[in-house]
Length: 254
Image (cartoon, rainbow, N blue to C red; front, side):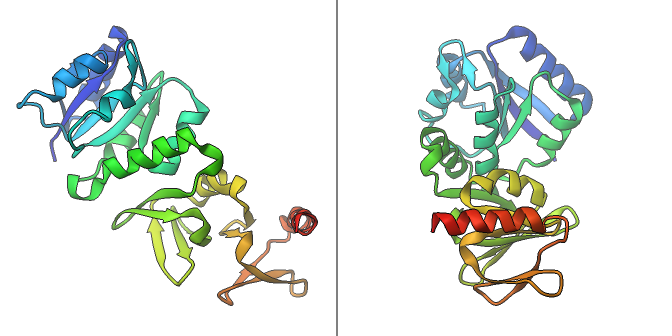
């Protein structure tokens, strides 16, 4: 499927490099326009002949943040890939919102992977994902909702409603309070890294649990947890000492 793309990048060399990499490694992407800032970007998107499927966006532009541009658009029916220098905070925001990003200097393999994840307009829900990203950016300590890029589309869930994660090859099954299940094309390690600050814990190579949904820890048989939904979750021998320490910390807090 041919993808029409636009690039918003204020560094001339960065623009030329990205165009070259797309031409060489992403044959199904055609760059139909580019701009170097918020104002020029608004003019670009205002043209009737510019109907992109994906936009490659630098976050920091010469005349402001790219969000100033996005917030002025009348509907966003294209996917977004941020192209940015290393910024741990921005990367974390992208992870929570299932927004694609590529770090500078651009790794061609990462570029190809990001392009492969571009979704059709009807499934992308880009505006909602950008809202989640901006909410996290504005209030990281009061963050309540995240988006999940699943096999059947984009889901938006409250973090407190996630009971546990279970790994299966390169996929992750996400179990929700009330019995719902989502299968995501992201590794369980990615979710572990994102949600550790929210009282989630990796108890086994296949399991990350929300400690708020633990019912009982059974010490026998190597040790396992019983969750509120009565599912038994094995605690690996290697992780058990650290987990017991975490339980003691939780008890002290309570």
